[in-house]
Image 1 (cartoon, rainbow, N blue to C red):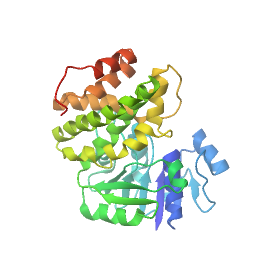
Image 2 (cartoon, rainbow, N blue to C red):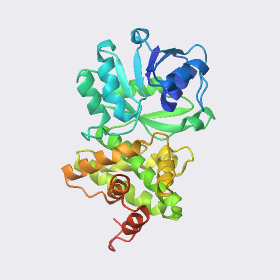
Image 3 (tube, rainbow, N blue to C red):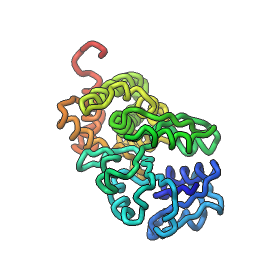
Image 4 (cartoon, rainbow, N blue to C red):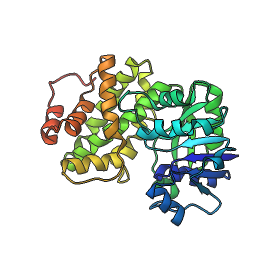
Length: 318
């Protein structure tokens, strides 16, 4: 089996490493002019992962024409551009798996919806979501993740193809809930970083309880299953996002409240405007997400905003 990887960031590079470890032929594509891709081609490694010589690194679309499955690991806001560029070169019947978490900022669309718009509704499209950092995986620390798609046979097939001792893949049954939950956990991760950086890490227990409940109401309002917020794609990903030193979103929140620069991608920054849009469209209150939005986009004082969030009117727990 030939696996094509679109992207050259830390997660895409890990996917190439992982597919190679499972014995598949692997080709990774990156933009030829990208400095990150140029460095990866030169060194065949990034700060976490070293790729063996048998993994093909290319900037040419022709090298991917015979791939059986495409794994997409680009930044969420780049997805439309990448898929629009690749649409003419991707064989119509080949499966595309979106291996990232986020929402399109301007539209609020889930990433599978973006992919359907770019590639057509007949395309087999799936999402690969859940907890895990490349640094842990290459260190031999296993995790459980989720494959979801509209078609039952597709997600069962993909779970079988990519499950191994390092990653056990379950197949989901709520594409809406799993995509929204996976995207929203990055915003909760930023909140955790704000609490850590502000010296209030002990409040992350309350954040976890209230965050999952908050997102469950949005999922239900959008037609998904509220309990999906308590599965691997949201609550199940909290440890990796709210506590791990590898979490970019947690680090971003910590740097923000301490007024320090942060130059790595934190998907939650672009996700929170989309969540606020969806909340308004569906008539759902998202107090945690709203505070993060106010801090990042309206320059609200983070200490004042967090204090106001934690001292809202008294109410029953749920």
